Image (cartoon, rainbow, N blue to C red; front, side, top):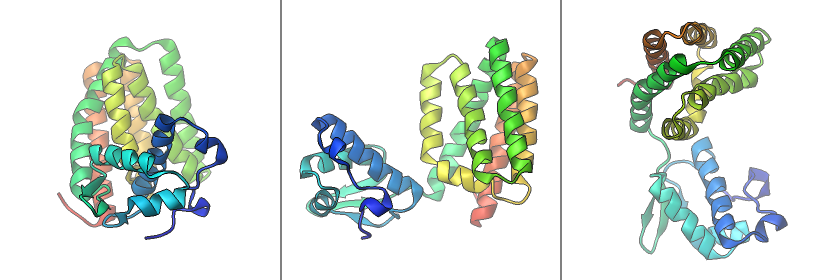
Length: 233
């Protein structure tokens, strides 16, 4: 197993060590989750409680609790007396997430269109304009950032905390793959054009059109990603 030291971004600071146990558990969880979702801790790798506690400079208790949290998110499988095996996110997970997103994210766009304010319109326009600008300049990281902001703004404006929470979790889970999807030839330009169409529907207050276009947008993103990964449904 690769060492989870400071050079890999997993080292815990003195400030972190001073946190209460609950906060410490969350920080250990977040760092391990980041490693798994980013791919730096690959599927199949074993996470040994004692070894991690030594490498992270914490007791075994927060590591053990963090492992349980990871298991609840289906990111690891705990094997009694052996530690945890990383499951990560596989193709089946991706297909499931994109399929579910196509339904509930379309609903979010519908609800935004039905309640949109002028401030909402302004913010969404600025995001799409910036995404287009960054794409012209070939600033790939910023294009990806604006892509996330566009979707997250829709979640925020839809008026449902439940829906917002679900969609944020899905986006967080597959963010590495979403960034990868935008690297496909011509995909960034198409994604921006699709965002423009969704934006127009929302600004027009057309919930039916906003939902349909969002569903098509997510399906197109999924098809492009599967093509890049060389897999099929």
